[in-house]
Length: 138
Length: 138
DNA sequence: CTCCGTGCAAATGGTTTGCATCTTA
DNA sequence: TAAGATGCAAACCATTTGCACGGAG
Image (cartoon, rainbow over all chains, first blue to last red; front, top):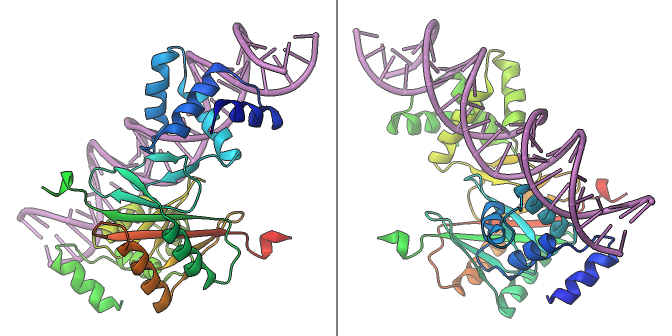
């Protein structure tokens, strides 16, 4: 998503455009590491030293509202934010907590087929696969 | 799982058998509603009025340790406990939070097929489908 | 008799809220 | 200039921890 699109989306929905907001959104939406609020705060506050965690949380709420990110909560108290809102698999290391997305047309097709067996109108999903990554397997 | 099996499992693993512990385990393991710690506490304390939430949490840790339940954390601050640790789909209403399991041989087969496309050794999974149930759809 | 479990009370920590100030439109 | 955003400090609240007592083995 380009910045101009994002700004348009904000305006359409009655949200103001501020530098912090843009920086936080850019950070989250371009991330591949499924960052926590804290991780986002660390990164963006390099550029905006006055930034508060509060603003990060407010902005994440906004992104959830706009359906641009999903929140993934885990056992170990961490909440991670995922800018990929389409059907995909979160491949997660049980030891170090690293999360990687796996995505393909075939995965989407297979999942849709699987869900069609269940008699409900799906409005979303969360697919996690747990494993132990090479680094942690020593 | 029968009580005798459970007791044997406790003993094997060096855990003592207490009335509270048995009652909590029985409640969780036989539940179909994916209860929260609070819900379990409410139910079991009917029978054991002196029960504390602390003990519920301790016992849930124990059940997680023994891989008899999975913990599912959600956006809305609730942690729910699922005694079904095999491959299945959590069918979840976005509005009221009700969770039902969906399970079938065909689901398990399809999921295994889907995962085989990903180059990892799966040690577990979490499959959520979100929808809006009839009650909430009015 | 020893160790573990129970349950009270207090601590924890990620997230949320109240509010005064600043910014966008 | 009005409405909304920011960021500090305080509140929240589910969960965890410290500790003294009691029950299991």
